[in-house]
Amino acid sequence: MDQFRSIAAFVLKSATVGLAAAFLLVYLVPGLLPEGHPARLSRPGTGVSTYASAVNVTAPAVVTLVGQAATGQPAGQSAALGSGVVMSAEGYVMTNHHVIEGKRDVRVVLPDGRSAPAALVGTDQETDLALLKIDLPDLPRLNLGRSDILRVGDVVLAIGNPFSIGQTVTQGIVSGIGRGRLGLSQFESFIQTDAAINLGNSGGALVNAQGELVGINTAFFSRRYDSEGIGFAIPVNLVRGVMADLIRYGRVIRGWLGVGTTTLTPAQAAQLGLNEEFGILVVSVQPGSPADGAGLRPNDVITHVNSEPVIVWQDALKRIASLRPGTEVVLSGVRGGEPFRVATMVAERPVPPG
Image (cartoon, rainbow, N blue to C red; front, side):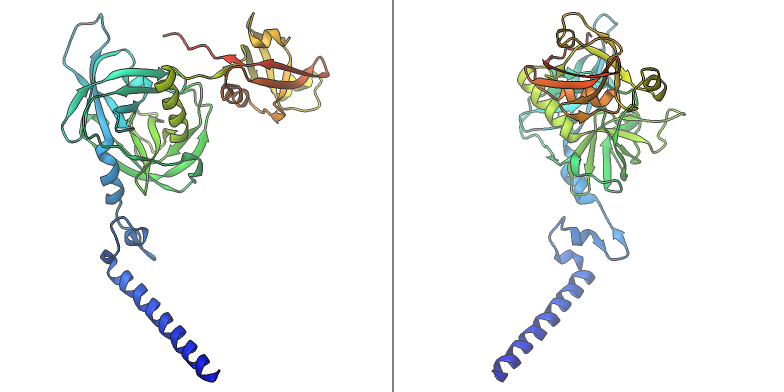
C-alpha cells in the first residue's frame, strides 16, 4: 500500500509540473496554438492583441451596393449606396430597406472585385431590412451568431464601406441592447455600439470577436452628421426571421388586431379612476378588424396580452406581431372602471404602402 501511495504521489507531482510547463510555454509562445484559439488572442493583463482572425473570416462576405436613382429620373453614373452582407451560398444578400429604396440597377460588388446585378427578393420597411439575390459561384459567407446572448461590454466589429472609401473595420463594444422608441423603424430592438458607424455603413455587418454576424448596421446618432460613438444595429435573431419570411412569402407575416394605442400616462390613469398606472390606452379601432369584432372601443385600457403585462404600446405591438395569423389572443384590462377580458383571432398585418 505504501508503495502504491508513493507511485500515485509521484504521478500527481509529475502531472502538475507538466501542466505548469505547458502553460508557461503557451504563454511565452502563443503561436503554438491553432489560428483563432481564444488563448492565442490574449495574455493575462494585456487584453486582446488582434482581431485579424475575426476580420479574415467575415470581411469577404461584406459587400458594397451601387445603383442609380429611381426610374423616371435622368440616367446617371452608378454610385455607392451602402453596404450589404452575403447571408448564404445561394446568393442571398441582406441590407437596409433605406439603402435600396427608390434605387434601380442595383449591383453587388464583392471585396474580391467581382460584381453581379441584384434581384430584389423583398423588403420589410417596418424593420428597415431588404433582401437581394445575386448569381455568382463560390460566394463567401459568414457564420450567424446569436444576438440574444450578447452582453453590454462584449467586443464587436463594424464592417462596411463608409463614405465610399473602401471596406473599413471599426472596433468597439456593445453599449446597450434592446434599444427602442427611437423612431427609426416600427419594430425596434437595436443593439447599440460605440464602434464607429458612418454614412455608407448601413446594411453592413456587426460581428463579434469570434467572427460571427450579430447584427446589421443601420443607423448612427449624431448632431453633426458624423459618428459620435452611438450606432445601432438590427439584431441577427430578428434578421433571421425576416429573411426566412421574405424567401418563403416575399413579405414578412405578422399578427394584427387593427387597434391604435398609446402608452397610458399617470394623469390618464387618474382621470379614468384606475388603481394601476400601467397599460396602453386604446385611441382608435379600425372597422372590420379583429379588434372591432372583439368589441374593443376607444378609452379601453389594455393591461395584459395573453396574461403578460404590457407597460408601453410597443410591448403590445411586438407581442401581437409575433403571433401568426389565425392564432387566438386574449386581452384583458379595464373599461369604465370595470375589468374586462376578450378573446379574438389575430389577422395578418397589412403591408405598409410604398
